[in-house]
Image (tube, rainbow, N blue to C red; front, side, top):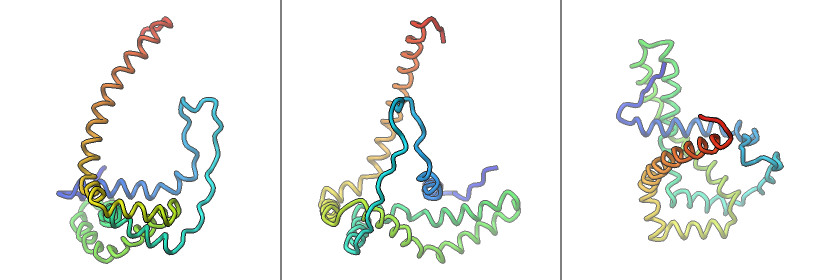
Length: 193
């Protein structure tokens, strides 16, 4: 049984739920090797990158500023409400008559835990600071504070939506092309599929 608290904020909560799923599964995924693909035949697997050096306070500060400038600091705004609603919603199947009360409890808890959003931003800031030098962070920050950087942030969602629609259309056509090609190649080998 699937329970949705979403209502009018459905897209926001779905995004938050996906973000929660990604964040929750990240440690487990990080410990597992990448799955084998046909393109990896004959390559050596199992190498792990070296651990990044501990970032400086200046790097963390610049990374925080960058996350604000590039819009990523606010991209997880729906995560905490989504996790709270998901937690409350997990009790609905066993207690369907309590759905209204569970919804109220979730709504009541959001303001109390909203202040923990800064923890998410700090995780992201540390990640950026581990990957970029102080000079690189400054350069990125300069870009995102420029007119074109601000334009990119403002139009990011539209770009992603438009790009995704284009990629889905291309993917459908490419898939049909590949089905035909595989069928033709198999026919050359004496198989009709």
